Image (cartoon, rainbow, N blue to C red; front, side, top):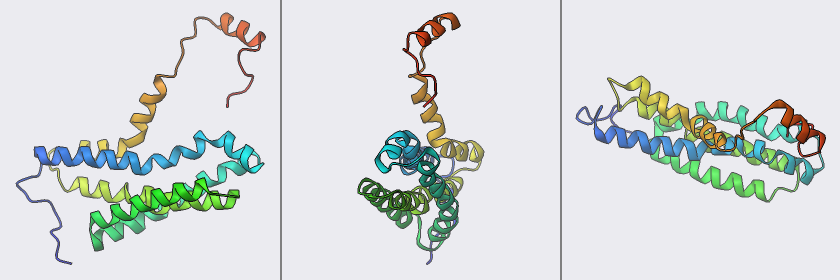
Length: 187
């Protein structure tokens, strides 16, 4: 395929590159948000399948292994077929993975769904987008790639910060615990 390897020099470090970085960041956040689904629904997964926490965590482990393998695979696909085709495959994989996870009758099917989410879904919106982002910047390449890579870590931390409640004193916390208002374990 005869595609240019780099962005047109007239758009490197331009406003167009900045917009492209913003779009890439959005795609990375959406495509990789599936990584945290298992941790959010872990108690529900345990109850639904009647398993312990370690077994309920296996789909996440499977997803992360598949994400690593998929990063290499989707990077190669992007080199051969272009970024758009890889992003379309990733979008279909994310939708298909979530649908399969929703219909799962066993932890193994749930794990396979998360493997699909990692192998093609998350992977297609990470390594290929980082590589593409690096082609649009010269002077600020490091920060552009870092912004793209920060994805959900920055947004997830910001979202969780709103849920933090102020602790006025440890004595007040102990009183709430003694009254049964606070759980003895962290879930």
